[in-house]
Image 1 (spheres, rainbow over the protein chains, first blue to last red):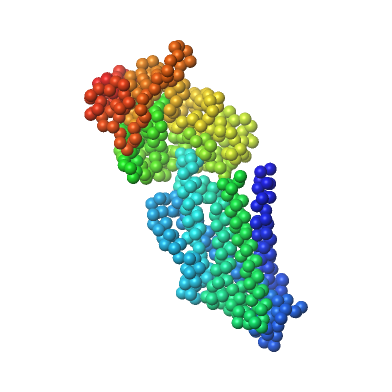
Image 2 (image 1 turned 90 degrees about the horizontal axis):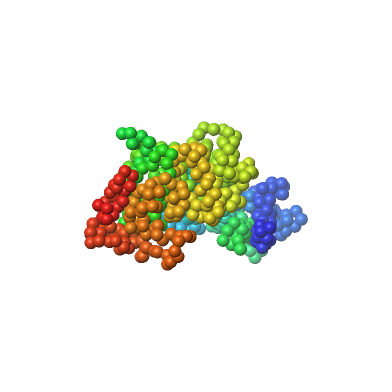
Length: 275
Length: 325
């Protein structure tokens, strides 16, 4: 009964978030099915055409179909974000668990994390991407590097909190080793903040990826990406506004979806807000 | 020596200190005692007197840092537990020495089912298949009087009441038939009727399995129910050790006398309840001399300057007071 009520109250966030997330994931997954046109093939004779039946969202300065570029761009953005989330979660989890569990290592790890977190993530990501050069793998690595400290922080804090609860001692008294305590006792008990943090990282990864591509250090053209589309279209704003509006809307939908979902999940999984 | 043979656990000169910003806290200060096979030893004292710290040292659960075990020996079946490495200690914990805790509400992992937690203990220590482990777990739940044990196996800790949880904890502690069970205030968080049931259960189990028990409590009446011998601790020291009957009939240390006379009586003359004046000294600055002297009604000049030694009185009694030496 209680569960149900809870669900009702927090319904709107999660619901709206989920719908937006599903839309963007659907587009990303089924990009090749949704459009028959190639996202990279150029038709100079068709350049800068307004939306029509043939090109739903018009064409760009090289005559490429904007709709299919957005679909594939979405696909690339999601791909980058998923990998960033996986890498940050795995690394952040290990670092955070170790720092939280072994106070001696915490002295060093926490200082390093503090130092990393004093820079805005986007600055770290941009400088690393600029240093390593553009390309999908490079931006995934640079973004993961920028974000893992956040995840590690959350995991560390939750680990310290859970470590103090008596069942850890009773686990030890039953003969469980450190690894056993970490992965069987602590990890399952801190899953909810990790899930929330992962969703949050996903949401900002979408934005940062778009930013990097917009600035030209992201996904290499001619491969489409949402930020790249925005950046290319900006030059033709007065004559072909659809070149900017369409990818802009796509970014908003994806980022908003994941953000709402993150907020909703945080509220739903936070026991302190249960009343 | 013949005497040593039936000693299961012998603690010699154990010192465990906490190092805090406010100074050094001698949580356990030169504590020595032993537990015989099949015996129940009671350890009583006020909060912060070092009784829990002592028990945590045995299984090396004493938090280090901020604490540190300074010196001493903890001989279990003749082997010094303090010299064992992590792996060896893990093999002993839950297998040969088990522990149950005061906090029944938080002592079980909330995300695992009861069955999972029980079978895991078996899997850590014995090479049994999961079904066999589960069978064993159901058996042990039956022994601790849990109704419908098969159903309980699939429940989560929050679905059980406090008394049930403590039974599960006891079941978990007894899974591998340990030689020593350390019970750190096992009934403090339970209400009185459940308390009585748990005590009955523990007594029955002791008879059945022959386990030695180190029973820690601040409740003298409870300890007298369980224990054959009692050790009283005050401010990190053992101040008196005696067989239960003797301790109650003729307490020697003024602190023990104070404790016993501050138990309200149902029979006899009614008067104002006796109390021990003052409160436990702050552990960072224990008084010079006898640590109890500021609160003692029988203090003498000697108590102010010199700490009394623990002296043997007769065969089985020990007391730390200048009145007797």
